Length: 160
Image (cartoon, rainbow, N blue to C red):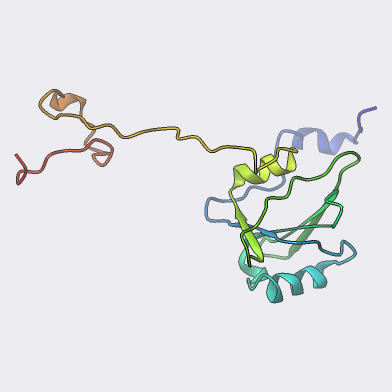
């Protein structure tokens, strides 16, 4: 049975609660965390164990030993958010850290995959573009985008 809400929340269903900017980093804490920790406990873990500033605006993720619970800590400029998720079935596929690492940096896409149940260790990053060498004699001047001239290799006058 789907959850129902009163009339005030219906216009907001299309909008996301969190919108992380491109400069926001997502740090994943390596190892198990006691999920009884609240604001102050997670704040201390970020500061002491991860060696980060909790009020930086970056996102910090923590998971329990069974990998079925996750907590997220983020500062939005006016206060700390602590969000929790408990899986009814299955486990989060936590990425394997390098030796001696205490935190792993994720991209926003990797965070979405992690929360969606996708194993990050088996996901492969593909090159979505490639740079090819173009001979400028074969390309007319109308085909060269001058606004983004770094995309097409151009010969300098010294190499002609």
